[in-house]
Length: 284
Image (spheres, rainbow, N blue to C red):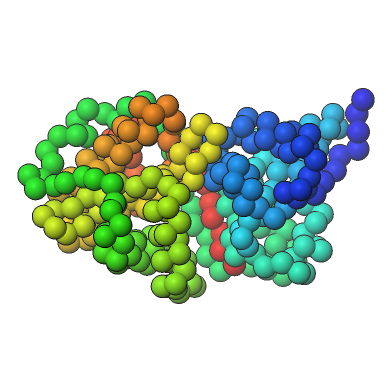
């Protein structure tokens, strides 16, 4: 029987049947929302809003975690503006909104109606890989290149590398580098995610890591080589080796790359990634 269309709020303590319905919806959209899936699986969210269609099936979902909104819609263009923005924005801070571009645009409109204008918007290509990287990506490594997992003794040197990555690739134009926050992020990655580092001699020159683990997907982030060591094929071989192990382990891989970063985009194409769609992160 058809029911009225509505947005409904859930929390981590919602009934099991409700959370199972949300999980089924996320699984159906996993390929475009690995980050949101990971937040759900880790219960690292404070609330979720789900929009129900006339048959009471979930057609859209917005997840709130640590001042960020993750938008996950079902592909329809008839989702109404979330009513909860009016009350929610008055008492909760929003640092960023992310998801497929067309979904984020709807939430941006809700923010604008409440007087919040994005300070920075970054558009990405969302890409996926489910097969082993191309064989030629393993060729022509620098003779003294070493690839290995990080060791506890690497933490301080990795912090310098991770800090450089955040300054170049992560911090929005209106933001500032926070060493304590950067170190906390690195510790979370080292303790809970997978990472591979590249070194030449005794110097760590690059890294790649997962930053989210979904139902059947890893989300890749933190791909970085120090500027003075670029052009040697390190990013290609490091990435290919890391991705090979993840895929042999039975998981697919997603990532999003800035549209303006043509060098990285070409690298991921060479590795075998294909484009799923347009992805956006808007910062406030």
